Image (cartoon, rainbow, N blue to C red; front, side):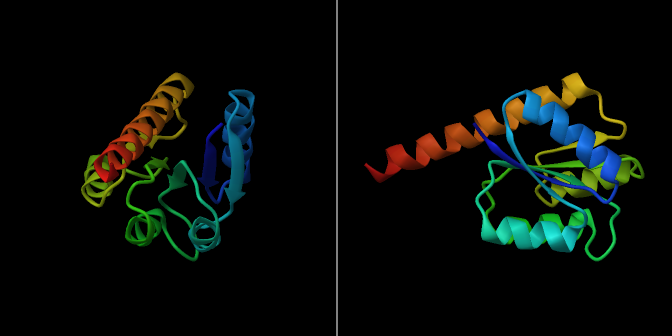
Length: 132
């Protein structure tokens, strides 16, 4: 099953998302801020990332930009309770797969995550076919 990285400075949000996604069969790693999440992203391959925007040390948009430089194929879904439409548009322009406001609608979150993972699978398959 897919490896998912959850980056959020709110422990309760991380734990809730982790429990729900673990129940769905995903393997979960958690980071308490963008800097910790970025170190984990550099050290391990993830299939998707759920990332808060407002965090200490490194905010979500900075994480997004740096992560896209390392591996632009990993879908990064931004999750924030502080954002507005401008923040959402900015995140998508910088390469976020999608933007979900807090508290997340769990059905929307799961559908968005499944769609992101399906896209990743299609991209990987396309790259494999092109190499042949």
